Length: 89
Image (cartoon, rainbow, N blue to C red; front, side, top):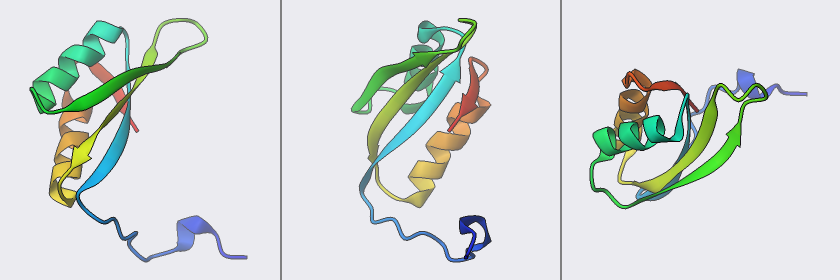
């Protein structure tokens, strides 16, 4: 049986494509500010996903149209580097 982690082929993504990022931060307002800083007025949907068991963290889903791989990766890296986010998936 082949392990999916052993597959070396790059997944083909057709662009433009709707893409979803999961953003984990300490507060919903932090997530909203980070998204605004990174994508500005770009059309998107931001929805609550869940809270951590202890209530310290919140996760939200960001969905938007990405135009190409560079666009998708830029948004991921910019959100990951933002001082108000803890993790991006």
